[in-house]
Length: 137
Image (cartoon, rainbow, N blue to C red; front, side, top):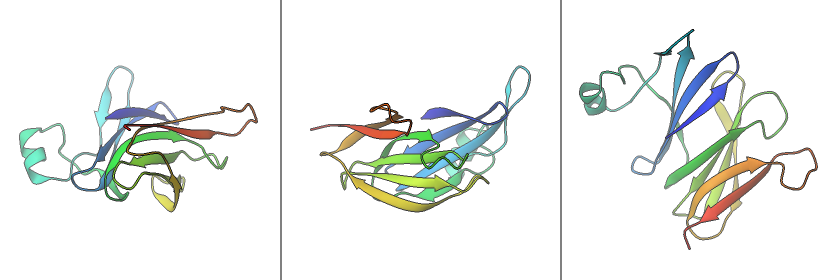
């Protein structure tokens, strides 16, 4: 699980779930001193076991085994984009943010064997974000 900052002091909870082959995003609105949870889990048993997860996650198909993710504005359009590793097919997938909380236009990039993490940063000082993965093997 990771927390990612959004505009206007909002936080999102992002979960990569290899067992259901999806990325789940839970939006949370930040108030003065605590987070008001506005979206949560999809599985009935999860909602019953954890009342905190009473609403639905936004859910995105991301391949066979999504494992790790990073968020950044990769295409300089002002909307956050997702980079998600796929442990089984040795790729990192990019989902471009549409600005309304949804994602579209996946691109796949090859990685080494079994990517366990992904990070985004300007590695070559050209002013543009770069993707880097760390692998299991």
